[in-house]
Length: 496
Image (cartoon, rainbow, N blue to C red; front, side, top):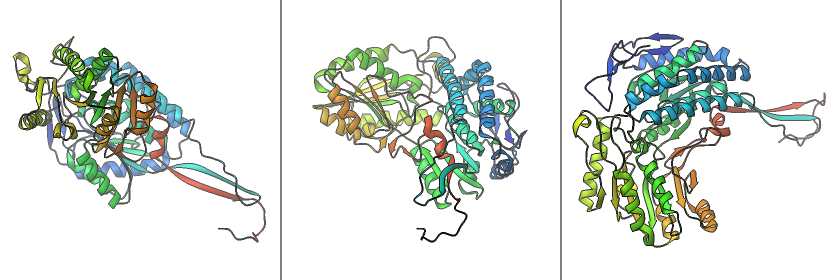
């Protein structure tokens, strides 16, 4: 291991920290201040990924036979270690991803809860006993592990997302090769070190850093039985198509275009505060971030004024500094994507309420900062209303009826999260019935998810079983159906 500025971060294969066979490295940058690199990380190769897969395949032979409660004990020990290292892990997260330290501490705390919950699932890996049509026959189902699982994780939640994939994969009896984002390698290294220090046997969890090459090997290698991916819809589509071609089990959690729907009877102060939190918290770099506010016309002026006042009061800066509300984009490409959409807004003639530009004054000039931005009177067919930006940009869409609000909400490719603000229980129930998202909130932000509840979306947002909650282990399990005939004689009747 290392702190910023020291030796390169390494791959973790078969219980050892090892360099890449290719010998290449990548710089790890602080997006809030690129003048001081955090250090170097090995740029893993396809050969590194194959070594990690071979290690995981060997370890699977023994790990699958480890009793599930014992596998859960490793997670509990990892949970205890993560709690003792919470501050250091949060600090690394903020330094290389950019979110505020308070957000990072919250993410680590959530990850601790995830480990605790999934460890408990080791005691609940139950099947079913099901009555047979035949006499003196006992029929039941039992879970079985899949084998080697490839996990490809993003930079925006570089602690929580690896944890909520690694934990259920391990507790179900699988072995893992983790390929984290090249923009948050330090965080991934610290997580894997925690599992190693928890006593996890060599080969059960492997880590390969790098850009595309290791991931491509995971997608096609015959010993990888399942792939779990979180990231962009473009990359996720490639993962799904390639994995399916090789007959792998695939789980993808991808983009979102999450709306808050504000009806005429809403508590506007609550709606405004929740919208600002969802749109600009974590710099809008959440898959559940609020990117659309669909508002009834009669309350739109009042709501927009409240949102604008709160947005202008936000402090932009280095996430390590006290009092900062909004950090930088994670890298130059992500900042340029945000600025590109500001250009699209200008071309479309959208009404700019506030923001709309890069922030470069003072110390901000050394990072990838942009202003929290609100566009008003945005047409539902605007590119800003349809496409995921992944930055601090909110589009306000004005509608004339709750029916129109629900139609506009659904008229996008994505279906991850949504929220409605109203005190009318009838409208709440209609919202639950009609809006096409996997996560629905009432009078609260679009963001957030609890360890014990499923997380995932509809339409182009996701494929495969939901992550987190009681469904988390399902993706990482296979099923065996068992018939035990205890007649002691040959069956005379036909068996279909």
